[in-house]
Length: 123
Image (cartoon, rainbow, N blue to C red):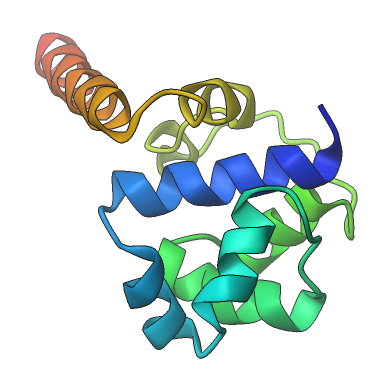
């Protein structure tokens, strides 16, 4: 699997998880839905300009998307922040994005419930 395919799958997984249609993302970011579709399918690697436009509507930090795209080297961190705990691992997101949308939504719902239960136990 190439970095371009990985990035596309991560973007699609996040969009579906929100949930947001490709048309809604297109309108929010000001990028054509046909271009975004090609990015999600791994046919195109988005420019830094496009990544900036789609970062906020998808709830990503720009630097995070630049790292996924290979434009920046990920920063090592000894401490996992609260915001990172709420996000799926890129590998998990890539694997999940290969499943049908109904399965993706069910898994995300289950993960949310498990996270809530774990939070309740630790309190």
